[in-house]
Image (spheres, rainbow, N blue to C red):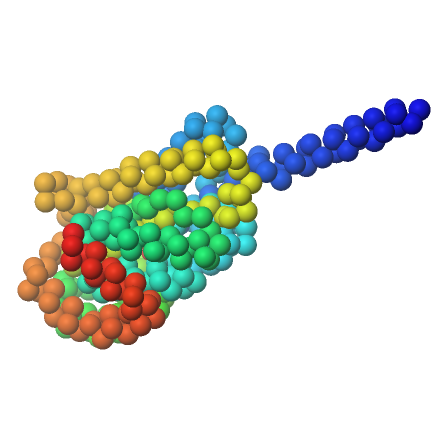
Length: 339
Ligand code: X2X
């Protein structure tokens, strides 16, 4: 009698414990946030990550993608906080959108810090990138891999931009970090911060004259169709993407699955980065040609033409170096010089 009671009690304990253990560790589905969907390299990168994770974990980890930062009602500057809080389980996010919470991520938005792809790679794949991953870890998320949104080129509906004087008084939609306000103000323009969701109607209605985004976003979102007739290639900043997982979610997975998710992120990040760069190189300029084919005048600035933009934004660079952290900026400059 005594013995069988113990057995029943034990059985009850185990049956009650087993399902809740499983539930706590592995959710039936994980929510992956991105700003852009699968018409863009960014969204394709997210989709690829999900696909590779499913494959590598034999379906133990199932990911559903939520583009348009829909888990935070499109407010991309709140995405990082939502990841920390567990409203979002995973994300492929832009360094720009997370920089209001992680001030070090403003690094990539320092005007004219990154002269070419090798400079960008020197940061993400070098000591600077490792330092930034440590900062993200301290902020309670698990960073796994880098991807890329790209070099942000400037477009507008009014006139060709060849010099800062051409931007004078022009209204530009800029992204969420205050650094962008400072840069555009320094150049004599009139910046307004808004989310990507609000940017497209603002361009269509003429509430703003211009915007800045990578070429893949310009073509993918059909920005030419809302009257953006001039595009200037000035390469003033680039935004990398970062593949991350919420810390609690990460800790709930076994080591083999953690490794699988990391490997999948590294592979998806690599594939996504080459997608983001497609048609933008000296050997293959097809992406620029695609923009021209949509009736847009594409202007490429020479180094001499870029010089005055760089000079006028130097005070912004110096001001933000203090906020970002002089040691980190120095590390970045060292990595770039040694590229
Ligand atoms: O909002 C933008 O401009 C975008 C889509 O490039 C980012 O999310 C940084």
